[in-house]
Image 1 (cartoon, one colour):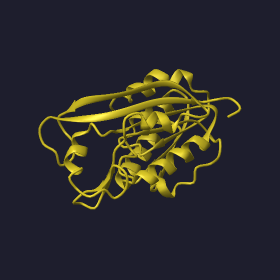
Image 2: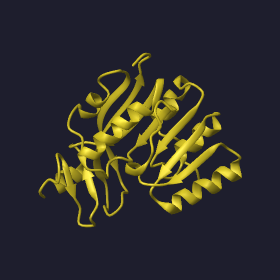
Image 3: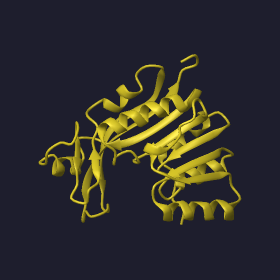
Length: 204
């Protein structure tokens, strides 16, 4: 079953100009499918091969314009000013802090003038930060889990600062939300999340 799109994608897609949208770490494909149904061409990248195959199948069955690529975002070739929108919904959490900042900078350059970035990621208010911060930092607010995966967390206002120059901030918020399922965690727990919708200024 296809779930509803991320609420900020649904709210702000009318402000996106016609063109190509890049969906980074598309997961179950809900945002890619939603935007393709609205008439956008969508490029999706995902490191999970099974999810790539599933979205390819869904796009074929639904006759919608989605092209997918099985790749790590760190290896992806971000084309300059190629996209009307770039999405990264909880897909940059597993990068080191330096890698996160590099990818955000590539996203900024990949957007056309007037293009929109929608980004969501965990903050230091997240329950996992409280659990992992007892370990040594790999980089700023970045920790290595027992399974060998990096988790990095955003400081207060950090995501907003990433889009401070050359962008208009259409939405910014930091909140704590309750979740009752997530990977190896059981029971209800709290996620700290920062969210931004930023539009690249004309002439920027």
